[in-house]
Length: 224
View 1 (tube, rainbow, N blue to C red):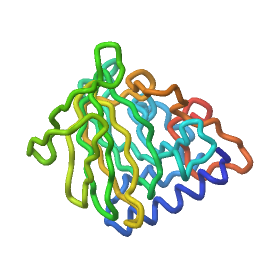
View 2 (view 1 turned 45 degrees about the vertical axis):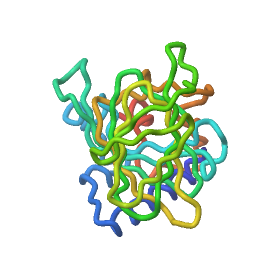
View 3 (view 1 turned 30 degrees about the vertical axis):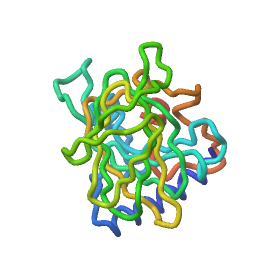
View 4 (view 1 turned 60 degrees about the horizontal axis):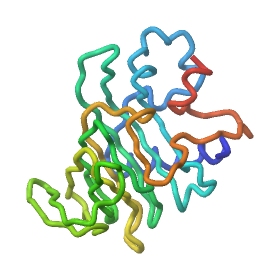
C-alpha cells in the first residue's frame, strides 16, 4: 500500500469516527514528531500494538480486501495483567476481511452504527478445515443454529460472540453504507493468533511515496 493512500484513509476515518461520536484518545492524532522522546512513557502503546492498523491482507486492492482498525486497549502477557482488548474498525460495502479464526482469543464483534455487517461462519475441524455440521452462535446473548458457511447479518446495535476455532469472514452489506464495527475480546495478538484459511499477509508492505501523517502500529520500531 502507498503511504499516501494510508494517509488518506486515516483522514477519512477520523472524520467518520467523529460523525458517529466515537472519540479516539489524544495520541491518535499525533504526527511522527510528537512521538519523539516518548518511547519509555508510551511503552504500553508500542509493545501492546495500540493505534492505527490498516491492511490490504497482501491483496493489493484495499477496497476489495482490506480493513481499517484502531486498537484502543490491549493486554500483553509478557508485560502486564490486562486480560482484554478493544478495537474500533471501519468496514466498507463488500470489503472482505478473509476467512480466519483465532486459537486463543474469544471476541464479540459489534455493529456500532452505519450499515449492516455480514459475517460468514464455519466451525473448524481438529485439522483446521471447515466442519460440515451445524453449530450454535450467540448474538446479544441469544443462541442461534447456523449451517456450515451460513451468514449472520448484524444491524446497528447488534453483536455476535465468536469463540476460538470458529472461522469467520465479514464485509459490509452492499447498498447499506460504511459500517462502524467494534470489537471487545481477550488479549489480541495479531502476530501469532490468526489462522487464515488461505495464507495471506496480515500487515501491509508500505511504499513510502510521501511522509506519514500518523504512525501505524507497524511503524513504531522504525520511528521510536
